[in-house]
Structures are given as C-alpha cells and as structure tokens.
Image 1 (cartoon, rainbow, N blue to C red):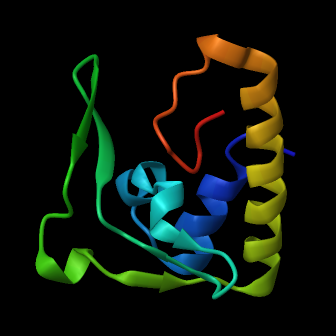
Image 2: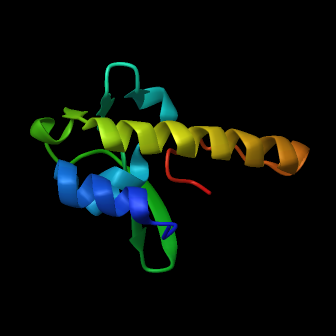
Length: 100
C-alpha cells in the first residue's frame, strides 16, 4: 500500500484539504465514533513545514469517516505505536495521525 494512501483517502473520500489531512492529530480523532476534528493544518512554505489553523471557522469542523477508513486508521495506529516502541527514546512525538 502506498505510504500516502490514508492521506489520499481523507482528501478524496472525506473532502479534506491536503494541509488539513496532514495536520490531524491523534488527540483530534475518535475512531470509536468514526470521526476526527480539523483543528490545525500543516503546510510547506518555501522549505519549511508550518503548522497553522484553518483559515475560517467553517474550516474547523468534524469529519465523519466511513468504516473502511476507520479500520485502516486503527491498523495504522497500531503500526505507528509499534514503530514508536522500536524507536525508543529517539522517537519524536508530534501526535500527528499521518506521521510515519
């Protein structure tokens, strides 16, 4: 599976903007309810990655997930936690959903 599969899925099937999908934090997800909250964005400006907020109040919203996406995110979370254990103290925790 492509490493950006989940990002593509959130953008194409759930209507998220690229920066919104890349800015989602695990703290903003509720996989039991099948939703996530858009509260921040991640954009590349020049050579820097910049964290920001959605540009409007309408941008801060709840995005409801289909069951297949929810299941993929749960599997991704397990894989990310395993990678974190392998990395030990060198892991830099940004709480980002799509960080690998």
